[in-house]
Length: 212
Image (cartoon, rainbow, N blue to C red; front, side, top):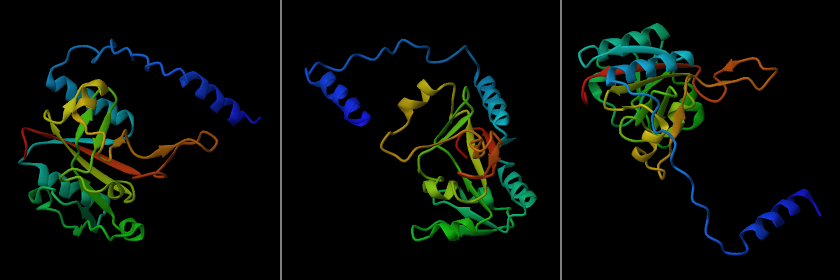
């Protein structure tokens, strides 16, 4: 008998009696401490920076100029634009806009210099941004293949303190992408290498004010 057979045999014996699944305790803390919305945004910014994301702050009046500057500093000649991205966000950008289309293959996406998206929400305690493919975010692949991702987070509307607060706000049937800093791995001799599984550079823009 193989190890696989032994493991599967134990599982079958454990569920053979038809007993109901044990109740999962949910008495853990939903949030650690009490914070104002401004303090929550500061915590998010601090944790994003710890993950080597570059954090920027602006408001509705400054978003177009900031995005134009970030793309120019990157030397981006092309920027991928998902459907639903507010048009005025890139009104001042000099990079040529590439509209996302279902037929685009990975080679086409890899040729794009930058991508700008919104997000579903962000989690302060973990420094995590969550995308769900909603308006202004596009398909998962467009945030994994280009080497530079600029993600806009509306503050305070899209910022929560903790993962337990975030989960009820997300639809598990949607393609959720959880991002904590630029893509990185230390699989080879514990040397950190960025850009292996996604963007090498992550710029996060905290956009103050209500929906812009």
